[in-house]
Image (cartoon, rainbow, N blue to C red; front, top):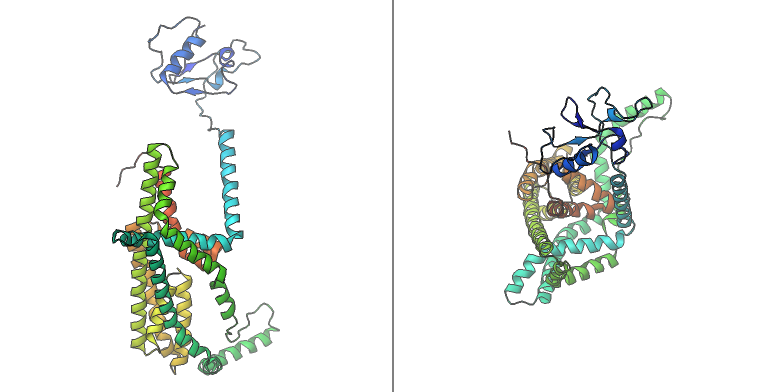
Length: 429
């Protein structure tokens, strides 16, 4: 029995011999040794070792036209249709994808249910990684690692307490004047009484308020639920601070233990590179975002001072603090400026000046300054940042929004080292 080739140059194998090799209708062997071995097994004569096959392309293909038919016992070739069969997804690959999806769903569920535990721990790990360069600097200055960790946490806590005190003083003063402030807001918003009256008359003429919006004066019932949503419990605070101190103090030992877990030298070097890049990139992120937010706070304070807003320093500190929480923080600050402006100024236009200026400032910062600096230094994609922000905000709230960008940086570093791109680089136009 001899081998035959079709018009495309592929070797046609009779179905009686091909059936013993595979039950599939088509199989491709891409290595030359498979060509020679298959040719020797399927041909009626022995091929000399090292001889050249009839086809110039090193492919042996069992064609669909070589199938055994009832009227064709020897599998003579039928007219080749030259139709490429679609790729078949292997069963094992499908099972692997399904298991990976189930594992991802299980991880997200555990993180959502165990928020009270995982949120402070992950926050401590991320913050400790950001602050570990400062601990290393103190250690090089002959300061013990444990003492340096305590000093760093105390310093950060002091700064946070100072900012909170700067914000809390006017907030407490304004909270004692809530009834008076409510009356002032009502007097300022009396210009909307006539449009609201016309709207109610239109509702009455139509025949009821069903299906039409009902305008009411804004209330402050959302303040307490919002504060409860933003404020974690005391146990979460305690878990965060203790974990943060221990993590910074033992970070070098943890690095060494994680690296020595692997026995292969290449794996150890890869782990070391991953940890170094995570530490450097997270430190750069914290420094960059802190400087940007300080600039936003200073600019907001200047805007409040120029427009005549009360306590511009406190409002600037509040703007810098809230700007650490993407999207949610600037919106909250915008609302605060509207309320304070309407109370402090006799006219609505004067009360909205500071809020509108802050809106323009945050628009420039969020769409140009921050993406330009962070995107260039840390190579973050804008769409990836948005999706990470939406996911972690849904999962863990405002604290998850704060962690979204650092966790995205960690994920990109892991992907770069553990899943390197094998695809060829396309030319740049």
